[in-house]
Length: 324
Image 1 (tube, rainbow, N blue to C red):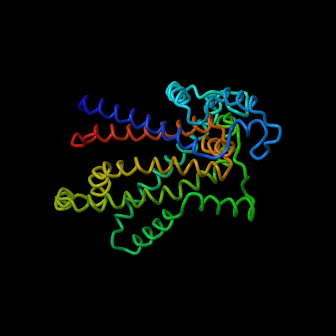
Image 2: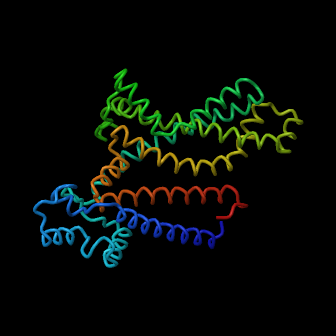
């Protein structure tokens, strides 16, 4: 792998992260409302609000001189890249401590759904290409296309209504201590079943369609025809020759799917009241809690960018023809 290309990719990622930090700063300051006023008296109650007290609270919150003060922007940028997100407006904890408590839950949800959806979707996609031009293929493609078209929040709401209200088999709030991973794994499965199922259904269908498309393209290559002409068994042709060579286009698509899965995990956390960073971001945005909202969104963006870059490096290592 060319060291120049690696350095160029790292520089591109740094520029992208800086731009993301700037966008986050701008977006949250375009929102209406005053966090200092909300902290003191609530969103609508302005009675008894003195200018001196409001100014003091704004200075404490890093909003002295107004939302668009350039000095505050420079402090914000320095804090973002040192992970010094400040203190939460409503709790006596640092923002990083709050995010650090929520991150393991998000990684658990995201990682579980990613592994299971890949493990189910890729083999099913290979089998679908094996059933080419049959009713089985048509049925699988039609079902997967329909499932893949459902937004995460729609499926999540359906599952919540049916399995927590009409048929209350599962809890509405999926909150559990992380210690249960060791002491009570069954309880973890019970509480995570609906959020994980929501992500697996949609992402598994997407992986099936992606794998099937890559396999169909690979099966038309000359080396596949040569293998069949030599009398290689169809199973070996499918899984040993075609599937292995289809992994590069599949992995390229999977990088995009990981970002989609991450965004889906954030939405699912909100709907199921799952104590991850997505739910944290939602609550902080509603409360105009700038430090917590900006810190949470910055971490989500950072994880997504790093994931994309790692996939790019893996592609370049697998296939030297690919340039970063």
